[in-house]
Image 1: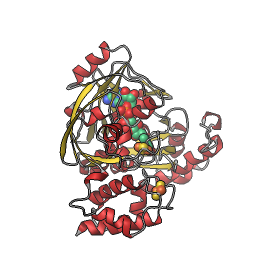
Image 2: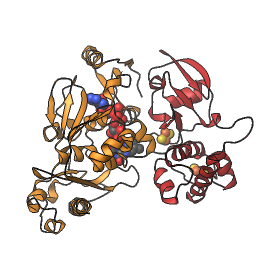
Image 3: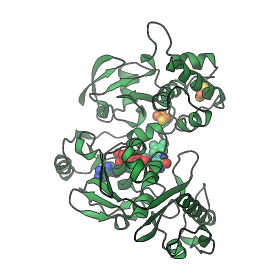
Image 4: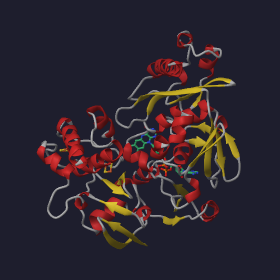
Length: 156
Length: 265
Ligand SMILES: Cc1cc2nc3c(=O)[nH]c(=O)nc-3n(C[C@H](O)[C@H](O)[C@H](O)COP(=O)(O)OP(=O)(O)OC[C@H]3O[C@@H](n4cnc5c(N)ncnc54)[C@H](O)[C@@H]3O)c2cc1C
Ligand code: FES
Ligand code: FES
């Protein structure tokens, strides 16, 4: 067993984990932050994307031990004072989800897209940047619209 | 995934010592290949030695006409690097098209070449550019480094520290990617240097290699039409659900021509 410490959504947390514990398991099973989903075992679907030290990563493909000492943001950390983050709001407004399973990963990846590309992102860029996030429901069309709208919203 | 002992090494020496002491140890870099492999129980090391804490393994330095990239430098860092973008733009572009953004934020140069997946992108660039792999004990020319399918010249306890790439006059990489994983079904890296034209091919066969037939056909000129008459050995090509051997042989020529055209543009 290992003792680990990290900051999750602004709060210091610590835990005892087995060496093989994945970051996503630590978040879901120990911290009960079940907004981060697991959709595959091949590191391809992106349902598990969170931010570690400001960069999007697949939390199913990182050991909890590798995130020791890091700052982690999950989907639960986005809303503040009961108000949705502009990207969450954009997914809601643009019908960017159906079953919602892929949505937490989509939103976390979308925020990373805006960080790297700014608040005006063309459709082709959004589609390319979402290559690591799979949705089995929507056909992506409204997700792309939502990301573009959310990007504008984040730009202020 | 079976359990293992975990250790975060603080230095190269510590990592190598931990590997020597382990029964069946494995280094972990970005984990983007290792962890999926362990989840599927295709690997079950007794010890996992994390290189993530060794600060001097990450970073990019340009010295004259040589770009040296630390083994732990992520694909995202190479893609975003102004230095790499200026000296070898084809290398920055290659890194920016590996997998997806989250994979690029974790996956590293050292991990990619140590793994030597037959469909990985970096091996084509190392071979095409005539790069040198630096380890804790020696320097290995790229052509001698990649020895077979998932096989390299590395010893069990040998650690890649960096790769140095000589700046070419011009270079380009073209890949026909697998739409699900973005790995190369075929990828071709063409580089023109003072010493002539070198071509690195990945995805086509069991291991990335130099496209000597293609280089000969070019005779030192970046002339795409010269590729048309080249006969490639179909029996050496990979065949799988994504592409037959004949199709891969065809793609090697098409990607080579596109890379030559991109060099000339
Ligand atoms: C969804 C997905 C899509 C991908 N798409 C592509 C793609 O399009 N093109 C592509 O090329 N790759 C692709 N990859 C692979 C990706 O580039 C990996 O990052 C890379 O292959 C391994 O790098 P890593 O740092 O994650 O290494 P790890 O997974 O940590 O390690 C891989 C192997 O290298 C060894 N190793 C690591 N560092 C060193 C070192 N410094 N010295 C000695 N041995 C070392 C490890 O022991 C292990 O055996 C993809 C991966 C995923 C999950
Ligand atoms: S659960 Fe992480 S990529 Fe699918
Ligand atoms: S909304 Fe159902 S998987 Fe994307």
